[in-house]
Length: 74
Image (tube, rainbow, N blue to C red; front, side, top):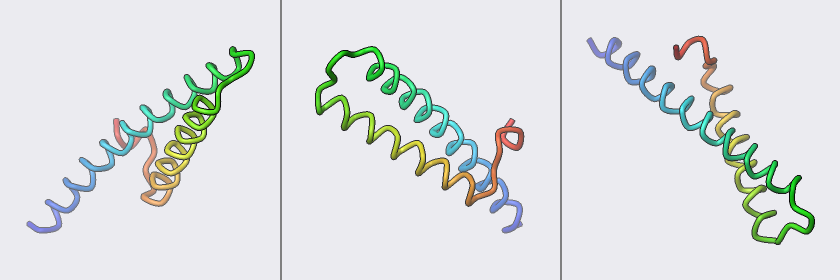
């Protein structure tokens, strides 16, 4: 019984991680496009881009460490 619960919890957290990963990816790409379109980006916008990139790569490393892919979640 304990093993089934562990697998269920892992699947739930994997799904949550993949949702956060997709959200961070879109946020990072939006920030990146904003920088590309602006003539002289402010330091706040540049720091927001670096923060979004760091979040995305952190979540990506965590997904790789947990060995999950998109096809497993769906």
